[in-house]
Image (cartoon, rainbow, N blue to C red):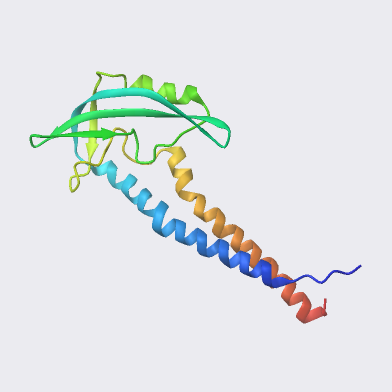
Length: 166
C-alpha cells in the first residue's frame, strides 16, 4: 500500500519549532545570558550568609533538590537580602551536587556579593556563566535546528514530487 506523504503537517511543525525556539531565545534565555555576562562586571561588597539549607520538592514523581542560600549585604547604608548563588540557579535530582554548593556557603560565612549597580537588590555570589547555565541558554537553538531539519525534509520531499512525480 503506497501511502501519500503530506508535507503540510511537517511544514507547520518545522516552522513552529523555529518560531518557538527564536521566541524562547529572544525573550527568555538571551536576556538571562546578557545579565549573567554583565554580572562579571558588577561591583562587589562583603556579605554574610544567613540561610544555607537544602530544599527539596517532587517534580514529575522525582525528588528534586536545590540550594536555599540567602545572604545579607549593605550598600550605601541600606541593607539588602539576596538569594541564590548564580543568575541561573536550578534544581537537580542529585543531592550531592547541592550539598557541595552548600559547603561553599555555610551559615555565618562572610562572602563576596556581586550586585547590579543600577538595581542593587539584584545580586549573585558567583557572577558570569557557568557550564550548566551556558547549556541552558543554548536550548532554543536545538528547537531552531530541529525546525530547520524538518523544513529541509519537507523541501526534499517537495523537490522529489516536482522533479520525479513521487
